[in-house]
Length: 258
Length: 73
Image (cartoon, rainbow over all chains, first blue to last red; front, side):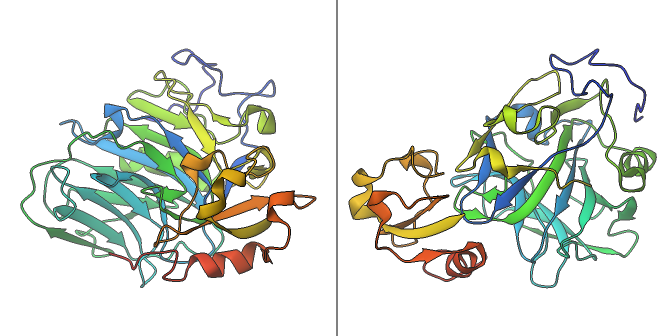
């Protein structure tokens, strides 16, 4: 259950709040040429747990067919998020057994590549069936069962394998790059509920995740200190697994926020 | 920001303190491995003088060509 109260870093090694309390003042601006943030591998970013897995992020994407976030670096294949694929759908694709040819994917019937901010949550229960992946975009649920998303798969599913691949923002396999803004990225080792997804959307305003159970990563992408944090993107979860801005400069920490 | 396409054969001449790329190891390389892209602000670094300069939208168009981006899987 989402905790919207101010717990001031009870479970965190860093304080995700400014002196004014929780506020979201910054995001990262990726140029789509070679900008990316890379975060060292952590098994918590691999959806292998029986209890499930979720990722939440805010994005502002001006053009379709772009991969936003991923733990996927040739020859290590785990998962990646895409703003759209030809038809303009938001999708997430998981790979099985570190095999590029074995995968399952959910594509939600919504185009988020409209240069407006959107909140996206993708949840995964680690099984192989049409209901294994659920997406929430701007608080609305998308699933194969609801008929507003399409689930597809390839090959025999055995499960996602943790690999050495880093977690990257703004890049795919560190070889293709996306022109976008990303903000407030968080990973949970549980399947977030409908109610939590709606609470995290919060009518379009990011919420304080301090003290959330199952929180395995929370990168605020510039908050709370703005450009002075460059080149470090702090992880405000208890893992403290910071990211590094690569081929970027402090000017890529911008005050364009949801 | 100003972008320049640069020949990898001359990469030893790049002073990474004068461009926004982190290091040689993090450069974006063309599909054939022969070119990279560098970016800077303000005065043109001496090792980039004389090369064609691109703005953001122009370099994005270049990066979306088959020379720089593999066809979607």
